[in-house]
Image 1 (cartoon, rainbow, N blue to C red):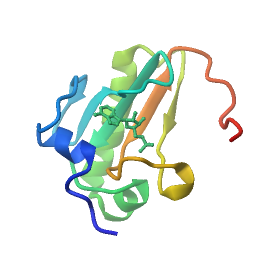
Image 2 (spheres, rainbow, N blue to C red):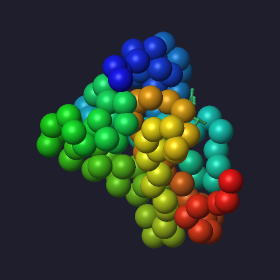
Image 3 (cartoon, protein in one colour):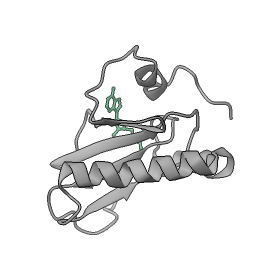
Image 4 (spheres, rainbow, N blue to C red):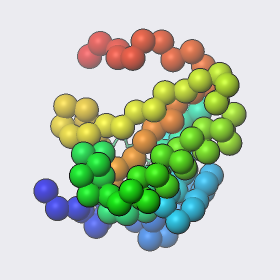
Length: 120
Ligand code: AMP
């Protein structure tokens, strides 16, 4: 599967669709999820064109990987959920219901999140 240049996060990275930038560096951008599932729900995306974590893991450079995951931990700290805790979700492929085919991590927190998976 080829990377879709018109996916919504590609458009955000190109500045064609607005977002509230919470963090940005050369490797990553973070912004609030438009449909929050928890009091804190922020998306962190790499600047490179990767479809999913599988694609990222296979093709990203060590600097891109380090930069991305460093950004995730910095954003969690910035959001104030480092001490209370948070969950990181990376959906990949159909069974996960990944909606946007640009690799991203959801940071969820701000309340007790319950068990990992809800039925259904
Ligand atoms: P996923 O199912 O892991 O692909 O999650 C994609 C997420 O992107 C969903 O939680 C959406 O609410 C979120 N989303 C879609 N469009 C936007 C947007 N324009 N700005 C912020 N979040 C978005």
